[in-house]
Image 1 (cartoon, rainbow, N blue to C red):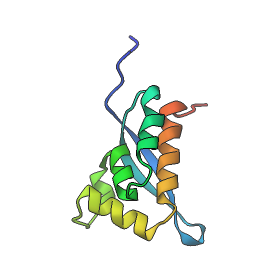
Image 2 (image 1 turned 120 degrees about the vertical axis):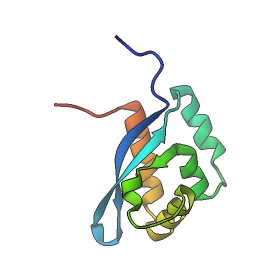
Image 3 (image 1 turned 90 degrees about the vertical axis):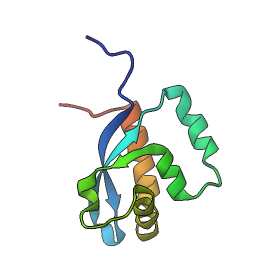
Image 4 (image 1 turned 60 degrees about the horizontal axis):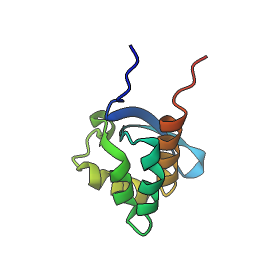
Length: 106
């Protein structure tokens, strides 16, 4: 049966680009938004700290991803974007890709 109301969150693995071209996969659980809510959300993010923008997209970080770190999700995100400047783009791109295109299966 088709489900007209989607789950409130969805999981995706985001490839975080590290300096030197290394890719590190990070499993995140995103907040679902209706298509009509996406653009207003991103417009409301202008001028906000990067970690706050990511907290608006991410419901939670897979606990296994934080391994030995005891950070809260917000601390983890702040450290992530400080250590990996491309993370914001990687995460927002993955969010939009998953929300509007989903996974393509062969």
